[in-house]
Amino acid sequence: MGQDKLTQAKVLVIGAGGLGCPILQYLAAAGIGTLGIVDFDTIEESNLQRQILFGMSTLGMNKALAAKERLEDINPTISITAYQERLTNKNAISLFNKYDIIVDGTDNFTTRYLISDASLITHKPLVYGAIYKFEGQVSVFNYQDGPSYRCIFPTPPKAGSVANCSEVGVLGVLPGIVGSMQANEVLKLILGLGNVLSGKLLCYNALTAETMTLTVPKSDIEINKILNQKDTFQNCQEEFNCELNFNEISVKEALQKENIQFIDVRETHEQPKVDVINPIQIPLSELELHLDKIDSEKEKIIFCQSGIRSKKAVAILQKNNINNCYSLKEGAISILEHYNQN
Amino acid sequence: MNLNIKYFGMLTEVTQCQEETFLFSQSTVADLLKALFSKYPLLEERDFQVAQMQTLVSKDTIISNTEIALLPPFAGG
Image (cartoon, rainbow over all chains, first blue to last red):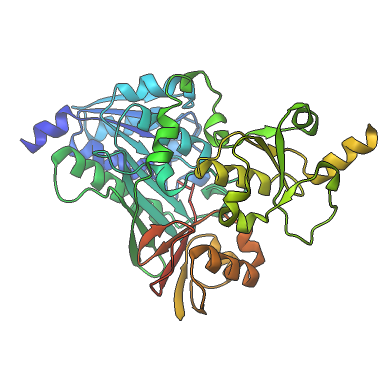
């Protein structure tokens, strides 16, 4: 009975790296009938301390292909497809539609948000795992109308603000533990065993051996934002998923608009002041406390010193269902420069 | 009241601790963040969510329990 369910299951694993290797190894050994592996990357020697499907004889090979060959040796009775390509908005939907369960073993936010959005749009449960140094996170999203990744982290972090594993270094066994937990959730989903880790985020610390399981409330606002993009999703660039919440604008474009409200989200002491455009001033840290000052009838141009906090402000306003907000690309100085030139 | 605040992932690089007792007398999560940003200015540049009593909460939630956790997203794999 249980083995039949496993044989009939179709699981797509994205990323055959530190997380993907243990996930794939256990899923193949368990006899999951159809496995898909997506990875465009090739094997390097520095991967071998944690990417346990590979060895010296496979250096330089594509990871999806090398994983497929190794797994076929572990279990020759299952069907494995290696997708030696990058996951994009264009190929994600049709690929996800071929599988029952999606597993995220990637190493960057752009792909993680792409996977989250595409699995939400295709109504597939997503088994999520991620690591940083000595800590890991595991959860199952989009399961039986449960929360999605964006219910926890609605807005992607700034590009480059968080380093990936190869940059910071991890204990090789940590992705082994977290990947095994992900494989466990996949098997529970297929077999209908126990309590699936849906609506929960499990946090594991390898140094203290402590776990903490947080409850994740569902946010229909965040989920609907993505579902509303369904028709345009495939035509967007990959960066779209990470930029989804950001509308950036230049001074020139901003000043061409009519009926606008300028919002300065810098702290009150920050210079230079730009009285020429008569902005209202609400420091970013207090923005959500002063939403009543924001004019719903106007288009909002938000600025700060360099264009980073204003992006965060746009995301906060969108989260509060305030639309028509733009982040000014170059910040306050660009406004003064514009007026000095003209 | 004395809050017990846990920090996860890269936030511990800003706070230099994984856990601390923090005296806090105001009301909401937003107030707490303001107090924490004044103690750790670099924290404001990080992305994270706040949990109270092991449940993720929004910024306007009133702090009524001493168990607080600050949780950043991880990308590694």
